[in-house]
Image (cartoon, rainbow, N blue to C red; front, side, top):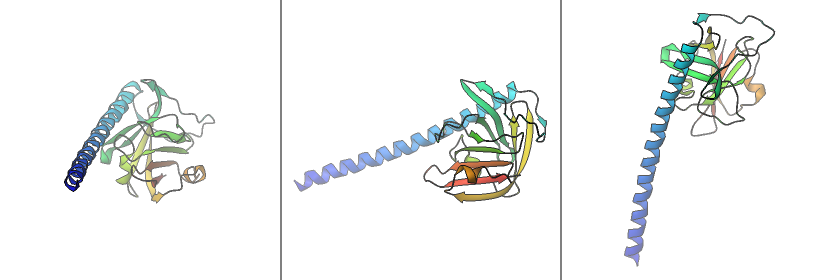
Length: 191
């Protein structure tokens, strides 16, 4: 009886170990696929937009960002961080806490320096937040082809992702990414 129980437990242990390896490899394959899809989507957006030119917030009264529809999804911008070879599409609609495939506009606009973009720190999302540090530069290119350039001024780890914390007026751009394996977020504040 003990030998049978021992053998059953050993077989279950082996099956659990094999399952863990399969899940691990599958998640890494999906992350790589998502990263490739995100880059291809951002490159397609840049092809469809007017030629990119540098710009600055223009104080317009209508601060709505225009969108570009691709594959049934509306995108409002491309996030570009050349130092880390990052090119990500930014989906226009925040989906009530669901991360989705791409970073999403949570609130605000590039036109009045209030843009907040959120997502996950997974590949194809905002994995770049772990690399960014104070002084780094990044750009947001809106669908009209205007590039807005920002400098990282503040990096923090937090669990406070309340609207009040994310939408602070003193920052022109805020990126926030949920840690894939926990409830902590990385916030990148830019001017």
